[in-house]
Length: 332
Image (cartoon, rainbow, N blue to C red; front, side, top):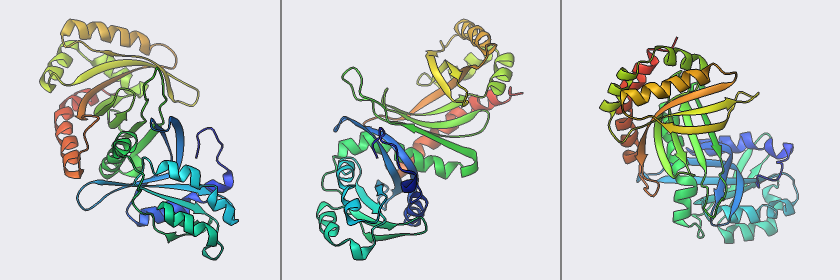
C-alpha cells in the first residue's frame, strides 16, 4: 500500500490470518514493509512481505497486497499496486474478502498476470490461486530493493529468538538525483548487542557491535580506557569501522537527529579525545552518544546464497566477540 495512504483498520484485521498462511509455507513475514523502488521512483508499504530459503540456497520472496471488501471489483482495485510489486518481488498475490464463487471475472486477469489470490477474512485465509514467478521482475531491482533485507531477516531470526530481537525498516527516498534504497536492521536486545544492517543510502551490508542504552553507555564511558580500546581495535583489523554518533531520543524513546557518525582514529590519543566528547554529551538530557564497531558482511552488489551468508556472519561474529565482551564487562 502507498505510504501516503492510510491503511484501513478493516484491512489490517486481515493480516494475521494471511501471515499465518505465509508462515505455514515457510516464510518469515514482515508486515507493512517500507521500501523505495528506483525503477518506479515511488515509496511504498507492502502490506505483507515474506522471505524463505529455497532448495539451492537462494532467496525467495512473496508480497501480498490486501484489499478490504466482498465485491469482485475490490479484488481488481489491488491490481495496479500488485503489478508494480512484480517489478521487484519474485512472487506477488492479492488478498481480499471476495470468495471463490464471486471471483469469476477477476480470476482471468489474475492468472494472466501471474498474480496469486488469497481469500482472506478476519478468521481465515485460503489460497485460491498460487502466484507464478513474476515475468516482470527485474533481478537487479530485487537484489537492491529487497534481497539484502530478506537475507538479514532470515539470518537474524534464526540467530535470535522473538523475545530477544527487534526489527526496523524504512523505505528511503530519492534525493540529489540518487536512489535512496531501503534501510533494514535486525538486532538482539542485549546491553551490548549485535545488529545486522542493510543501509541503502550508503549501500552497505554490515554487522555491528552496537550500544544505544544510556545506562550501558554510562558504565562503558566511565570505565573505558583509551589505550586498551586502541589495542582491541588494532587486533580487530583495519577493515573494522569504529564510530560514535550523537543521537537525541524523542518522547517515544526513538533515536532521532543523528550527528555523525564520527569515526574513531586508531591511536590512543585520538580515541581519548573522542571519549572526552562522548562523556560530555552523555551528561545532556535525552542525548545518547552511541558507540558502534562494524564489519562489512558483503558488497552491496553481491548476492550471497544461504551458506555464504551464514558463513560471513559467523566469521564476523568471531572477530567482533572479543571487543563485544570487553565493552560488555564495563556495563554497570
